[in-house]
Image 1 (cartoon, helix red, strand yellow):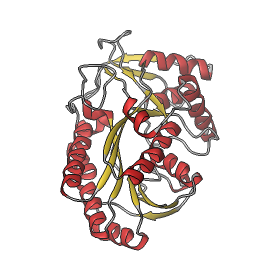
Image 2 (tube, helix red, strand yellow; image 1 turned 90 degrees about the horizontal axis):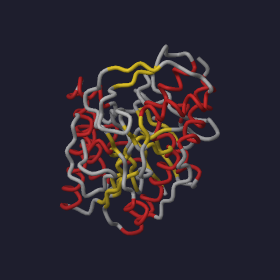
Image 3 (cartoon, helix red, strand yellow; image 1 turned 45 degrees about the vertical axis):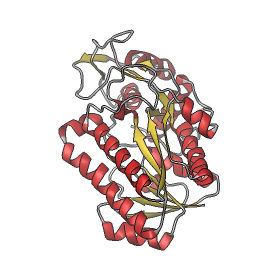
Image 4 (cartoon, helix red, strand yellow; image 1 turned 180 degrees about the horizontal axis):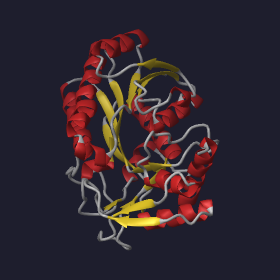
Length: 324
């Protein structure tokens, strides 16, 4: 199948590109390389471009004529979104409108959309399923919820079809250490903890110790990036086979606190780095854990790497490969 992947040079996008390439799909990656890297693209061809460039994305879609688009290009940092809301709405919402407009004009009807558990805000019940109300508490989550509504309205008005996958906390790296997280400024907990173990950071900051959780720190559902990539392939297969739109959570159904993650990083690395307790970050819910029963039922998805120690080991192998 011919698939255009926006943001395919980024962390999650590149792992999905790897899985798509290994499955034999013909790929074109559209990425402005603002946070991604051309070396992370293991399959397909790169078109350097921004979704704000309406002429270029329209030309690219028309020339390549994919059967489906996978859309990962977005700004994703919760804390940054609180400080720079306009940038998040512009990149995540306005640029998605540019993509959807170009898809419509090119006659492309199938989209797999990268969404987030941040659309739920602070759920009333954990684990959270797809029927929970959307009540984001930060601009990042709000921008994704807005796009989900746009997709729903577009599907109701036309033959456009999509699946939106709501990610929980994505972590880990390619088990062969070919690709992994390579943000210029690490914000993910596991990556920051590993960098503290490497000595790149003098400490690991724990943002908030008074949450209503077992040990007072935030709890998250950590999913290995390759399990998430598999979910995309299965979701695309179902979308193409049935033509039915759906929205599904991607997570393992259980969570770990910040302290538990830090303890496992110390175990894996053998380094007892310093934890600094500090104030809460804006926009952080106490706990986010997925009910992914719908994804499993609709696609047959079965996780292969549901093990925090394995997740951290793959991320550690990648970090060590990068040096200091």
